[in-house]
Image (tube, rainbow, N blue to C red):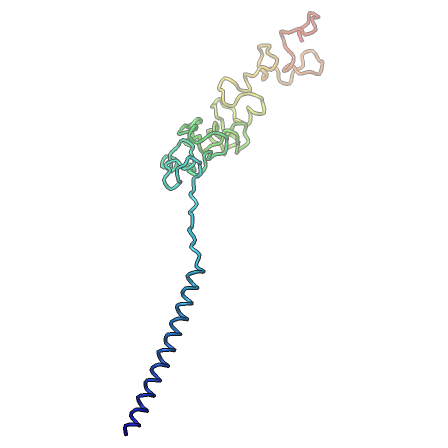
Length: 206
């Protein structure tokens, strides 16, 4: 009876030793794996790129004038100009320089109207054209459209300059009165031949 109990005890002890041994090895393996993983872990520090459009050293997220054109972001938002573009209309003038001016009094600020582009091709740039979509517009209100003055060579922005007053040959007679005339029958219009000058000094006006 005693021998049987002793055998059982020895068997249990042996089984316990085996279990402990296996458990220890498994723990070592796990520890080794963890150690290996930790040793291969690379710590990456991500450097966030700071956006600074105008290069003034102030991050765009904190810059009150992101494009550095002299108009604050709030001012640009109020007048519908582009806070990310220092020259919204692309005419070579900073938005801050053009500011809130309206040179042609058409309710569109200069910052939005180009001083080099002419949408309707009437001879007057958009910034100075009171209606830059109407080719028949008369900016100086002299009764002659911009396009008519462009063709006549007069100033469409000067009320004192228009086709009826133009005097090409400077003889005191407006072109409109000399148009179609050739007083001396030399095949040259009176428009370009003066009634007071004598270029060849022969005693007869041109």
